[in-house]
Every structure is written in structure tokens, then in C-alpha cells.
Length: 143
Image (cartoon, rainbow, N blue to C red; front, side, top):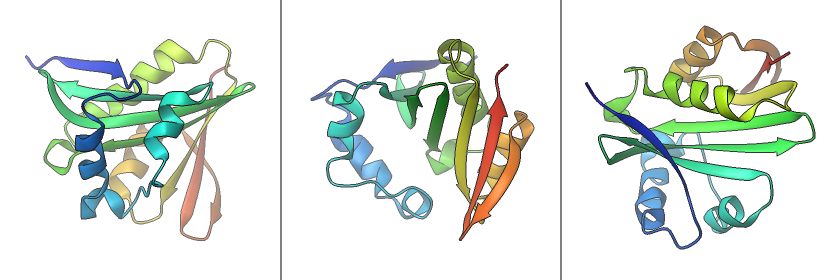
């Protein structure tokens, strides 16, 4: 059976160049765009976290979440070869199970054409709340 691990990204992590390459893949970039200083932001900002997603020690994605008061925002990417295999679901469940004890609401924004993510979040109980341009907003109440 495959083992899924989550490792907090640290400043100057040796996987940052690889993650930058992953984020530049057309299939990832289509739905998640990052700034030049993104990895500085996620490794140096209080209440902002980025976990590497590893399958049998192989890097297959990342999950970024931010906590503001009692609200959490999540973004996730899984490499194309590993999508629709349950790894995204397991990753979101990991965050929900381990980091939402003081959170009331979790929010995600999903591109209207990102059907896999829409199915993922709806399958986990996230509820559609609004559409803004090409983004759908979903929330999950933890209480």
C-alpha cells in the first residue's frame, strides 16, 4: 500500500526549485498562479503553511493554507499523474483533521473549469456560496 506523508515546507527547502517547476506546469498553472516571492511568503509568514505531499517519499503535490482568526483558506495541487486517486481528498482531510480545532469556517476558491477540484470539495462536504468571475467559492463549517 502506498504511504502518503505531509512535510512542512521550510525556508530554503531543497524541494522549492522542484515545486516551482511543478507550479509552472501548464496543467497546474491553469488553475493556480503564484508570485515570484510565493515560497518566501508561505515559509516566513505567521499562520501561513505549505505542506509538501509525498507518496512513498516522491513529491506529488502541495497544500497551502492560511489561518485568519477563525477562518482558514486552502489551496491544493496534485501532479496530473496522481489526480483522481484520492490523494487530494486525503490531503484536505489531513488539514481538516489536524489544523481546524480553533477554526469555524474553511474556504476555498475553485476555477469554474476545475471539475476535479469541484468534485473533491463537494465530496468532502464543502458548500457552494458564490461565483465571482470564473471562481466558485466553497465553504466548510467545522462546528
